[in-house]
Amino acid sequence: MPVLRSIRERFEQERPLEGLRVAACLHVTSETANLLRTLIAGGAQAQLCASNPLSTQDDVAAALVDRFGVAVHAVRGEDADSYGAHVVTLAARAPHVTLDDGADLLSVLHAGDAAWRASLLGGTEETTTGLVRLRSLEHDGLLRCPVLAVNESLTERTFNDRYGTGQSTLDGILRATNMLLAGRTVVVIGYGWTGKGVAQRAKGAGASVIVCEVDPMRALEARMDGCEVMPALDAAGRGDVFITVTGGRDVLVREHFERMKDGAMLANAGHFDVEVAVDQLAALAGARRQVLPLVEQFEVGTRRLNLLAQGRVVNLAAAEGHPAAVMDMSFANQALCVEHLARHGGALEQRVLPVPPAIDREVARLKLASLGVRIDELTVAQREYLTSWSS
Image (tube, rainbow, N blue to C red; front, side, top):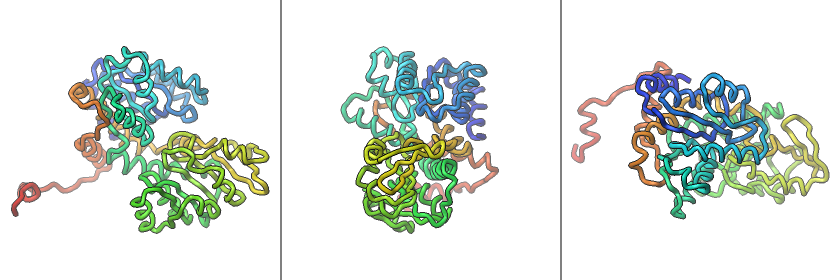
């Protein structure tokens, strides 16, 4: 993770986060550990809990505690009560800056004791689902701090979502099933940045891709990208693999299950485990059994439908999430956003705000430098031409 390392080296010299209490509710992985190390190098006091119990790497959690003094509250496979208690523990320590992956930490901070928010300068949000929740909070006039929408920055959308989740989603499916994608029909439900990446990788593996969307612009884009586009109910009888990438709930329900062919695979690459209505699938099934460690099979009449990773995000529950090269840019963005909030948080509006473009450009510059890539610069005359109303 050379981009994050270069920021860490600068942070060690400048100490821009001296004394800052940072609380992070993120996937507890080795990549996240590098982000926490960078924040600590800048002078922050860091604490961490898991945003998904199935993605926690216990050895990483232990190393963060033993080697870097991070207060970590996460155990792989922890139940919902333990997870909730860990989030509350972080909130109760009155952080200055939060880092969220789903807005659970900020939601608890806003619902809890006002003293927990007394020192809050702001937060960052990594996911579409989290931003939906925070914008709802803002709409109701209840958001009490600025939040930088990291999920919508160019470095996040372009690289994390399209390249990171696009690749790691198929990695998780292949690890869980060892299936051959070539010649299969993959149904991608949702054609945002992540859905585009999933569809692109599936086509590259030799699959035929059907896209289901509710947004006409995205549906048109999918069609122009060479995908078939149709309603999910029409696609239900044709797909071999179904991948939900919407951030919503009840994307695949009983009506879809009733039309699916024998052997269909169901995977979620959105955020929470509510996109595939597992309760409706279970109610429809005559029997269910575990056929592989990450594959549960439901018998629906004479057909067998296979649910991957309990309907949780398959790229994390069945694989290792984004490659480090992608998370390098995403977490570099996070580190620079924390620095921005430390310097300017008190002067920012209490709204969901875009990441400053200068941060995106700096992350891209550092990434190019790490690859040994040089680019052109505008001449003085070119700059004047591009900023003048007359030629």
